[in-house]
Image (cartoon, rainbow, N blue to C red; front, top):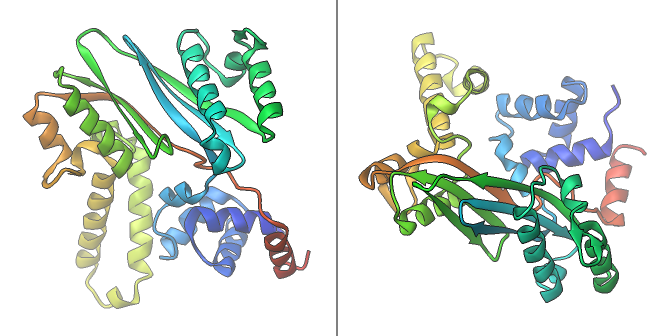
Length: 297
């Protein structure tokens, strides 16, 4: 199938791989971006799909806690300058509190919430008219806890990264805050290994097997040795994905799970938002021309 410059650009931003490698991966996988990421990893060209965090858009996220409810909201703007604007910050705060006080489950439901200007959507449109830049409510998630549980939250760089978690077994706000910082800085995907679906484990093993098979320096190693290398790499990768198995960022001599155990705590849920993650930034004309020229468009 024909591979477009836009597809190659998206894959490059997801993986950091070169243009020709991305094009080849897309050709090999019939243009399937997710499969192309795996193809690059199997061939040792891309380390992990987690590099999707490189894709960026401007704006901020925010955590608001009210009693047993808490919310993480992301609102996007076109420039970082506007994201620091007092009107934008006030709009983000108002939006978070409005949604938290409602029963809205989707962005569409949130935009229909009543405000003094009509709806939240009307309020955002009015802000756009004043600020002179497109502003969008991208996503939000609400967590609820019981009285014997505690929220932990952390916002990095004013909300470029936000993390929210629920802990049980402790009432210590320092502990819950530290765990939120762990989530923000170390990007776990799951709390424990038992939360990880078997297909995720199988996929990681398949990728590591392909990497070992394609490694010329291991070509003459016995199959038993290769299998051991695969399992070692799989184990390390899965530990990096699990919160409790990660090194604790404040003391790398212990695991995050040890820190929780020492404080009699356990993590029930967590959310992490990275502003702009997965959004393709508007490319300038020069970049578009280069990409088009490379593909004869």
